[in-house]
Image (cartoon, rainbow, N blue to C red; front, side, top):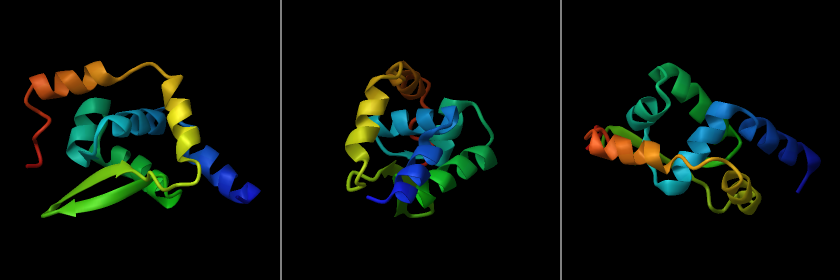
Length: 109
């Protein structure tokens, strides 16, 4: 892998909100509206972070009707590094549990 590719990867993951998005995506795929709820940010802000992760090929899009769901790109060369990085961060599973309990996990269905 070229130094420039690693640099692009590190720049994409080197921001708190994008790290949180990646952490959430290790649990499951999510649409923008769910990530907006989890992150408590505006939809345009979340979309910009997703765009940067997509440009670095860290995440993938899956269109389901009018909704787009995002997931981690498990074929990315640095996917094992990404998983290790996330394993060192605080767990966000409680946030996802709250999203489910509040009935907001299914906003896009």
